Length: 124
Image (cartoon, rainbow, N blue to C red; front, side, top):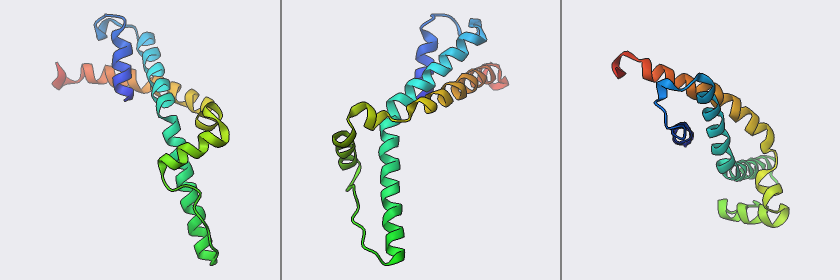
């Protein structure tokens, strides 16, 4: 998904990729990384909550205690998180540091990938 967003944001300039300055490629990469994480972040929240629920169940079994899982699946998790915390607080809590990391990671990674790919001997 990041690569598709990066390609689309790169094509907005309507230039050949080799003509674009590294700064533009880097900004396109950083933007694509942020958009990708913003779209996928709620699913990551649900995954983490489901994993935590499973770990709590396993620890309770080891101690011989009963534990009733809080979530029955991803849909149930999404519904309960929305009901308990609302949309922004429930689905996007803690996204700030994640977006900073995503921006700088994609800021460096995607332009490097593009330059290496375009200058690779088998690609010419």
